Image (cartoon, rainbow, N blue to C red; front, side, top):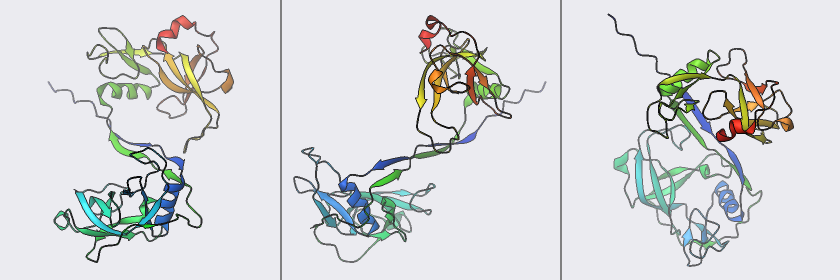
Length: 319
């Protein structure tokens, strides 16, 4: 008798990103504009401490601070860690050290990459200097990295008015995580059922709640959920929000509605977009059904079924 081969383990690359635009106050604006101009600025606090990078509020008194000073582009490594496998988007594509560098004239350390041939070439107390990027735009990446330096130390911090032409007033902060995701036994079954236009959850043998998507175990009872249950396809809108800001790379016109939908037979709601109805007519209790696109592996959106709205008591526990 031949043993059955184990089911294929699903794996797929997954990218989670949330870039957002933030405005800069006068201190951060001067700091980043200074980097663009090849000048490193810090700020002096109430007790005379020079902080680089600068902060906008005194860590001792919590008062707003504006006293900018210029510090040197050379400094001393206070501590470090070797990075032998640089990741995409990191400052260097060859092994390097992450180092805390106290610039000459500063009292605090700046974290950045240190370009060195190997960990044996790095030590606490070594002297380094800024290697400026070939093209600078007003960002921390205008410092390409630090590099070893055997020249003289810089002087004390000197006052700076922070005035530059064409100051940087805002930045786009990139938040991104790339990894390979494996959904496991329970969600693999859920994903494979979706490819057949079915929605399958798992029931807890103790409390009997049907989890959709399944989690493999009941978080309340702490037992495995192995009893698979097909739910839906129709369901009820339990709550919703109106989206008025267009997301990057999402080809959906705003405003649109995203809702929690309790599929018939499910013990909790999943989320999905509501279409086929004006956004201001979506309501709690609205009965909806999935709409699939050709070749789609999951519902594109949910639309009204035309049934009467569900009674509140029928879904109040799922809000």
